[in-house]
Amino acid sequence: MVNVKNNTATQETKRKLIDAAGEVFAEVGYERATIKEITDRAGVAIAAVNYHFSDKQELYYQVVRHAHEACTNGVRSLEQECEGCTPEQRLRRFIETILRQSMDDSLPVWRGMLLSREMHRPTAATDRFIEETLRCYVTAIEALLAELFGGPVEREQMWLLANSVMGQCFIYPHKKEILARLYPDLAPVADRIPLIADHIARSTVATARAMQEASHRPAAPPAPVG
Image (cartoon, rainbow, N blue to C red):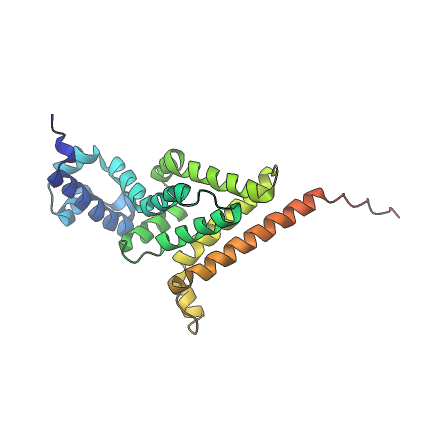
């Protein structure tokens, strides 16, 4: 039996809905967005939302998932591409992949706007995305950082290292217009991705090694009293 939802016409309708919904959600947010505005912009019937997504909440989740898709697909492909690489090389490739996918000009503008909204005011869609997809990638980052560390890592140290990497990977794409105004004499951020990836990777490796050395250093004797 033919799966009607997978034929070319229905997949095109689904794509139109995700693109239109992405624009509307990015512009006005989930609460203010209406199904009618989305379907009008997509040029499809309101019933198409129920058919493909069941309801507005599921549509929003699929839009958020789609917005993250370029990065998650890029990270997924690294598992095979980096087979046999050192932890340092894998870290650098991971960082460059995230930066390139986040600054891909071929991706719709609404994607960055929507992700920015979700970062500042996370919804249930982001909670679901974290549990279904993102957490496994964070676990992979932590495993890679543990390799760099060369042994067990205290939870707080891992938190600092992982968030340092992820934070820097996000700040450059989302603040590239501000950086262009602050440093008009330098090349655009998108043209300096290898340099940025090298910097983040080198500083992360150096920090991991410094943490490792500090953890093996004997504690200083207590200061004398009086």
